[in-house]
Image (cartoon, rainbow, N blue to C red):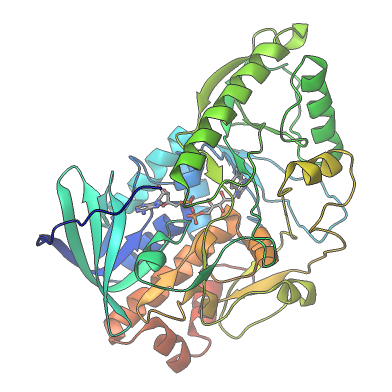
Length: 445
Ligand SMILES: Cc1cc2nc3c(=O)[nH]c(=O)nc-3n(C[C@H](O)[C@H](O)[C@H](O)COP(=O)(O)OP(=O)(O)OC[C@H]3O[C@@H](n4cnc5c(N)ncnc54)[C@H](O)[C@@H]3O)c2cc1C
């Protein structure tokens, strides 16, 4: 272990002032920024990468789950993608669970980058790419500034309201907000996966979206020498007819705050993907298979879950909970990936794993209060880092829900800035308004 050294005190330039700062430009942060800007406030969006979309684009996710009944910004994105041939409807086969998957779809990640920038530009959102939020100043339970680092150096941005859409809850952490990570007893987290785009697969190859098809694909790779670390690998065809996205690996115990661990997992995962595609070329039908691209960053399914005014729990899922401040309806059941190799082996053999035994969910609503920090009064969350327990997170975390979470958070933050209140006060003083707003945008509740 190294000792600490003291960083000298220095003044920081305040580079901008906005009504709202959104940290993170993934599905949730983009939607939050667009929704807020359209509600009449000035918005600065701070994004670590060089594109909007987060896991959608830099993570090459390619597949939108739980889009059923989601309208609003998600519909706009679909229409824009269709205009440039970047959208493919991909029905999820019925699987006997409560999941209604008839609206799942894939997209081309480059088309997605372009569409998101086009929409952001139309709403005058100020974007700062290549910028990482590295700190926050807090006074009397209110964030006054975030600190960012980028090509211009280190600087501060002031705002009235803030939304953490960093996935891992970085802004909340820097602001001192409380949070949870992983399973409540063991602390274990879902595995990380490096998504890849491939070409040269057999012409008639079908998507692997259900257990049997996934296990068959695993066996296919195994028969050519690759025992994939993900026993239920995913293959989905993309709008570009010669491309598919594949999820082939599981890296275990990768923590959102262990940079060396994330780096090591990325290198191992990339090696696994390249070896698997090289090996499967021995199959005559796969002889032309190539890795076209691997994601810029490995996808972490879990990071910090910041505590909110309401914490969604597994019992809410089991009871199909409804709320007076509902923002959308979630259909996806508890979709827990194995948290260790032993569980993964069981999953590959269609056995129950440690944590998913007997868990069922009915469609349930997400309340606006789960997007409002319980510790920092002008901080909201959207996407992966909202307030919920380990099991609830495994259901609501997918991007069909990240968009309405962002859309609702952006609206609430904008109203709060305009009315000079904080989001918790806004929700208390305007009961039902956010639900009516989301319904008016076409969301099924
Ligand atoms: C491997 C994997 C497979 C998945 N499969 C599916 C699927 O098939 N379908 C589906 O719909 N969902 C799926 N999900 C879930 C889904 O991708 C995420 O839960 C979703 O992306 C959450 O959106 P988000 O906007 O909260 O986070 P992200 O997409 O992670 O976006 C966060 C953004 O914040 C930026 N950022 C992070 N830290 C900072 C910082 N300190 N300062 C500035 N910017 C920062 C990042 O660069 C990123 O752009 C999957 C997730 C993973 C990891």
